[in-house]
Image (cartoon, rainbow over all chains, first blue to last red; front, top):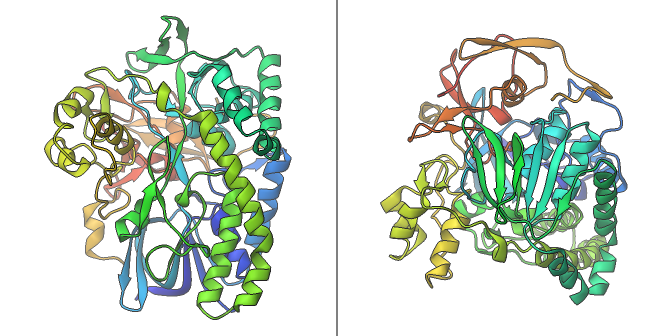
Length: 455
Length: 91
């Protein structure tokens, strides 16, 4: 029999935690399900419980998240299901049926309500050589450093358009690693111009600006070059990366590359369920649509954090708080007046943080700066579908039609990597507003044998 | 490169990947254990080209390996290494 909970929260990051905390003191059973072993999300990807790390992730921004994670850990009646991957959520009569999977097998749980706070992922950006071993998303490298206390390379190049790569480079340097260079495709003037269009918004986000400035100082002291207007063109090597080549022809020796062109919402689960989504922005992807209490378009299903749009951890915390109170309101545990009082500050914070997030989107906008794939550059990593194959087929219709003909998007990642690239290709051919691939079960790759007997 | 300063790891363990014994630490993922020994190739693609781990957060499926005892496919980046684990890649 499936274990039953009043509420299942998918994702134990800033949003999921805030929702559980907002509901504390009510007699509710809550399951929090996360692919990572420990709570915190990607922003606070904790070292394994078996590790002890002194002075882990210093800084005020992290301190607030650590305090929340500690609070979350003290909650009664919250079942932490770490290292559990949700592969399906479906309506089953009056409640939701969830299937989770891990190395031990498949587990079935049910819940009256579900909150999806699944975070975001790095935008996958195809260019020649990007499938070579040693090429990662920048987030992948950062997660190795934060959690596994491991620097995956001797000489790392970070490249893209997103300012976060400055912080990641500084974290690698602080860990004793070597960053060969940080490459921004856009000129620095474009970034300044974007900030100057909204100077007040920029000031309110000064915490982020100061963090970027501090990272720049660390990089300068370590002698790490930071270059602007320096677009990556190819990544080369035989069995792994040995160097990159810039659009200018300049060559940089390295054994590891981190790509950082922005982030897209993890919205596969709400899409699988048929919840309404919207195009998430210039970096691509789709964001789950919600009302003022973080209700999705489906009754009983709530969404919060970067599943609804990438805006950073503090905005996710605010949305999680709204979702938690909203769930309490809908279930009759909290009345409207109390709900309004409880969330006044979160709403105001959320508004300011959203404004800063939009400014950051403009500063980091990858659209004019994407590398141009070559004919045999793989776009769909799972099914090895290259650019020329897609270019030949993408005049004909929808993402789903191209998927059927080419297998692009049919692999284990369910199109999470290739969908934004394919949609940009369709867009270039005037096929705008494509809704993307129809999302299917399972949300993550699982062995077919598991489906016979979910225990 | 494992970060040594200010870090205490779990107990020393050993896993086997494609018949090669790898020293690792309790708490490390299969991915970390492999990469830290220079095993960056997780498979070869349809054109025979070497392929590596990409996202390290369970999203992309590039790092799938087989736990031979259970004949189970898992993502190396979200699966913890256990002492004595026997793993096969598609490399």
